[in-house]
Image 1 (cartoon, rainbow, N blue to C red):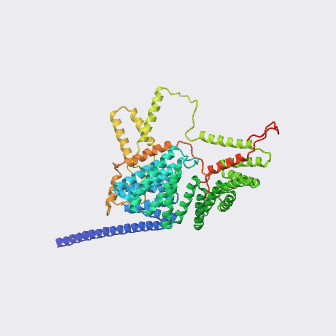
Image 2: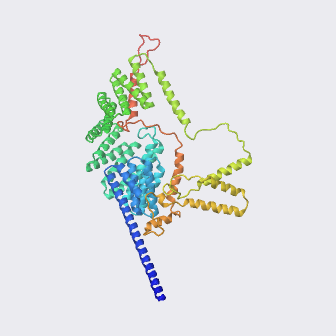
Image 3: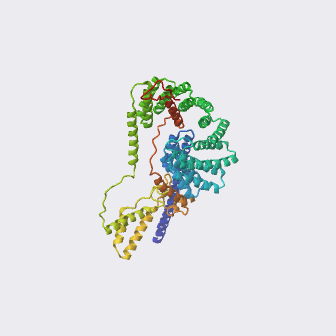
Length: 621
């Protein structure tokens, strides 16, 4: 009887254990299904946010697009292709918003992610985007490295379209570099040799690009390249070649009905014809520019066309028509509250009225020009206005010769510029410092400096939140504790202690180099459980590569070298601030007008009579 009861109890216990195990399995299954469902919901939510961000960017609402992309990153995703696309689109959106530091950040994320997962096509696109952003930031050497990487990958993949884009980006980088060197506003063709070298490289890349896009039959790409090629030839002083290139750009723009491109082509043709001394042809092109600007309702470009027409008629000495167009420019500049444009209009109107002998009106506009130049801080404009007023007062016989004040003003401007040159960063000198260190102190100081410099040179490929995403950033100095341990090691002569310290120091440095992938790539969601449900093979590779430096580091090594050379390039006098307003075109033929004005003013200056004048003596020719 007792044995029977015991068997019943044992069977009950066994049954309960089986039920418990079955219940436990069901709970785990439900938990897994719940996790999978939640992951799918998050993936769907991330993708939907990203698609909405892309839609907003396509309609030109980049600020809203950025908000959706940032929200998608906050949700996160395990799909590396989706994450790469978000990085790329977000970088492009920030680029359009002219927030270039943020654009640079996300294009770097995209580049690092695509390189790590072995997506060559994605790496090529990321390199191109990064190069364009670096170009806008003026970091041309780094941009060239990115363009070269873009071209190498696409050439290896036999991707003609990608090669053409890379070559076009190459040309744009060298074109921008050449323009940036011309700080002084030199006339086309009269530029420094360094600028000529860069611009000649740009023409080579544009010509190479044209040969490919012609084979591909891509007329739109041909039009873009012809426009940039024409601008490059214009800066080099090859005005006839510029006319040919811009003529092709005009034809292609008309094929596509692109009014904005057509307007730009007409304007560029007008600029080239000015330097070919074909003023009538230039005026006709400017008039077509004006008509298209009015059709497009672009008031700023309309004002620029009026300004260029006024200058063209000034060069033709048709001053009344010049006054008409400069007055139109003045009215639009006042509507757009462009004080710089108002100042240029007043200066031009003063010149035209002086040529017509309307000296009272001329001095009125000269005074307005002086007032606006003071307000906008335009030192060159202020000096020009003072000079014009001085000449006009002499012509009017007002008896006031402000040449002394003019010379004083010019000398003060020169003094200020000289002071700026003397106070550039990095040029402060300490004179009369005596060295009181002995030999031992000197060598101790030298070893400490050398040790810290060697530590600075130990850069880690991956470090926390910035190493993977920022291959360009300089290495940080090791913590003070590490340097103290090194000095303690030098003081202790025991070999065992030295080896222990070396191992611990080296181990800690290696630990610092092991970055968390999730923190380095925002939006990358990693499974936190000990046994992830399903790990993407690319994600597994990414996690493995976080602890191992990549073999192909030539690309980033070149970028680091460019970074170092860029620091040396920055040690130079900074360019003068731009004083061009929205209604003033970049090419205003300032020097041509000044030369014309100087010749006219010299003709108006009547030499004083000799001290002893004999009426019977003949006057020499």
